[in-house]
Structures are given as C-alpha cells and as structure tokens.
Length: 234
Image 1: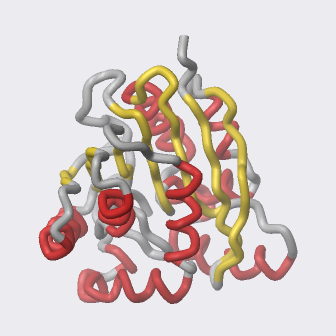
Image 2: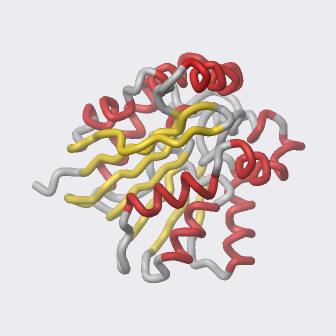
C-alpha cells in the first residue's frame, strides 16, 4: 500500500504511478481515527521520529518536505523543534491530509499539508534543503520507489539531504518473522527491497550521493532502518 508516514496497512491512492485504487489507512476507513494510536504503540514512533529528526539536522531557514506526511506528526514535530524552518507535508490520502491540517491548527504549527503524488511532486527543481520520509517507501512498488527517488533528487537543492526511516533488513530471525505481518498487509513485492536492504541502492540510482543506512530500531513489526543521502553540491 502506498503513501504516508504509516505503518502496517497504510493507505494506497490509485490511479497514479503509485497504484490503481484507494485503500484507507489500516485497511479500512473506519479505522483511520485509530491510526496515530496504533503507530505510537507498535513502531516506537517517538523513538524513531526523534532519531530521524536528530539525523536530519534541520536548521533555521531550511525548507523541508515531509514526503508521505500522513497525519502530520513528523512535520509538526519539526516545526516545533525548529520554528524557523518552513515545513511542508505531502500525502496521497485526502483523509490524512485533512487530519494533518487539523492537528497542525490545534498545535499552532505553521506546517502546511497538501494532497499529491510522490512520483510527480508538485514542486519546482531545487526547492528543498531537506526531504524527510518515515514509513513510506515500503508502500511503493519497485518502479514507484525509483520514480519517487528521482523526484526527490530533482526537488532537493544542491547539497540538500534526504533522511528516511523505513523497514530494513532484519538482523535476526525473530525480526524477520515479525515483518511478515507487514508484508502480508502491504505486499511482498513492495516490501522486498526493504527486506533486502536496497533502499540506499535505490537512492544512489537516482543520482543521490553517500546513500547509506545509519542505524536500526527494533519494533513489534520488525526492524526499522534509518537512511540518508545527499544531492551532490555540483
């Protein structure tokens, strides 16, 4: 399933290069209001988002894209921690975009959110200093991963950085077995390259430099991996 900073069963928007029909977050529209609570409990949300934010080293004045922003938790956190950054979220699920806007308003956050397709980003070349993404890439099929990576490379400014938290290779059989639940919900084809540890290869193939894993976090559904890459300065 595609799009969003989601965990198991995250929504899918189709038709587009990302897919061909819409499935709500957690698989059913009635469960969408439970999304934040489920993610907080099952994937150590606070831990991995804080780790991703520390790695991204976002500074005052940076323009930041949260790709697959879901309910806006990460974008709102960035805005709170770095109030001088301009934070924009994009997600393919209109219901998630609506929730993110409501959460931002309640939090007094300046983060903005819009509906859009990761494989056809509605932004000009060299727009962002940082692109961040959490639990999004495993929803995309192999071709979609590469299209999204190419779009990220396009919208990053020279020297700009991509920072990703998503499912990665399992360090042991227990973590691998736990991840089968995610694969059953989100598809074996979509998640195969995550399991194989190939996300850095996908980002490097889009022209990004220094693509590499930087750490792992164990969760109830398997191993989350942190990854980074950079658009070359020249």
